[in-house]
Image (cartoon, rainbow, N blue to C red):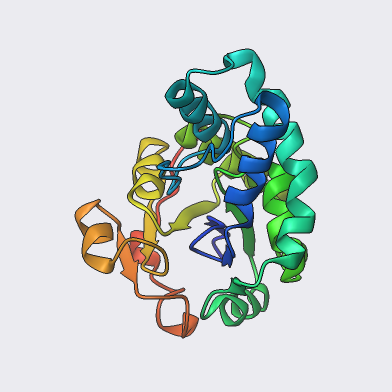
Length: 232
């Protein structure tokens, strides 16, 4: 049986953190550089955490590239408490059902391909009890370039499976997820559970578009859109 890798985005695909991520970044900007309301007017969808921080520093005219790591370190210290207390935190429709379905099938591995730095992703997943479902991934802490973190996620997953030709697919909720997957040579499935509807994801070139992750038996086996892309 051909082995398959399903790599999921986090925010807007698996869960909503109740704006804990935004609040954590704002707390970090204020603590490190004294910037208040640093995230005001910043659109985060599909961007890596380092890219978001870089954008804020440029927009506010404060700090520089040397500040990015310090801000992210402060962010991941603030985040767990903010996630645990967020009223709006929720796992999105069909996520638990999908993960149970995938983990019950032979030759399938679930992982992450997310712009979150890894400690941030893990903090967001922890409240929902989801960390156990994703033993591997590519993260914003691996690369500011989303396509590169997809390549890293695929390589790591193939190493874990001990199969360097295992098929992979990215599942995400933004056009940036789709673009990064295709730039890395991997198909992308768009899920309209975030800020982009099915039409926007289709226009972005998603190989398959889902309204949400419910009823996995109707879409998990869409093997026609898989391909064993070489990842250099």
